[in-house]
Length: 228
Image (cartoon, rainbow, N blue to C red):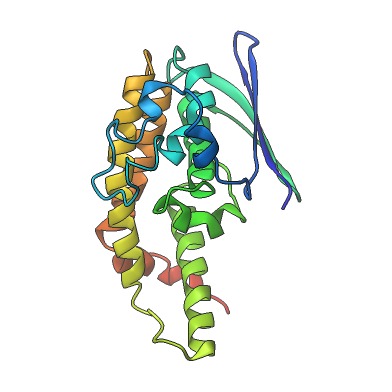
C-alpha cells in the first residue's frame, strides 16, 4: 500500500509533513540499541494492560512512532489553526481546523498501523483511513470492518461468528485503558497542550464507543433501512 501523507501549514507559515507507512517494520529491536525521549520508555506510564515485558522491550512501540510529531508540536497551542492536506493513494483531503484535530487524525492512523499489541488490532481500519472522521463515521467503518471479519469466520466454519459485537466492546475497553495511559505520556512530552488534547479527543471517542456498541449501532437504523 502507498504511504499516507499529512501536510500541515500553520498561520505563522510553518509547515510540517508526515508520511505514514501503514506496513512499516517493527522498530523495537532497533530502538533498544538507541536513545529516545524519556517518555517513550515502556515503563513510563506503562499501560496497565500492556502485554510487553520491560525486560526485553525498552521502549513503547506506539510512543516511538509519534515521538517525532510530539517533539515538533510540544510548544504549539491546541486551538491554533492550520491548513491540512492529506494525500492517500486514491484521493486527497483538505480541511482548515485546529491543530489538535489534525493531530488526532494523524495519531489515530499511526497508532493503529504500528506494533502495539493492542492498538494494532485496528490496523484494518488504517488501510481505509478516513481523515478527520467523527463518531458516526468511525462507528460505521469499525462495525462494517468487524462484520466482514465475522462473515469470513462464518464462511470458514472454524468458529462461531460474533454477530452481537461483543468483541468490539471488549476491544474498546482495552483501547480506553491504553489511550488514558498514553495521554499521560504525552502530557510529560509537551509544554503546551496540542498533542495531549488531540489524544484526549481520541480517548473521548473511544469511551463513547465502549459504552454500548449495540445502542450506537441502532442509531443507524433510519439510514440503513432505506436501502440494501
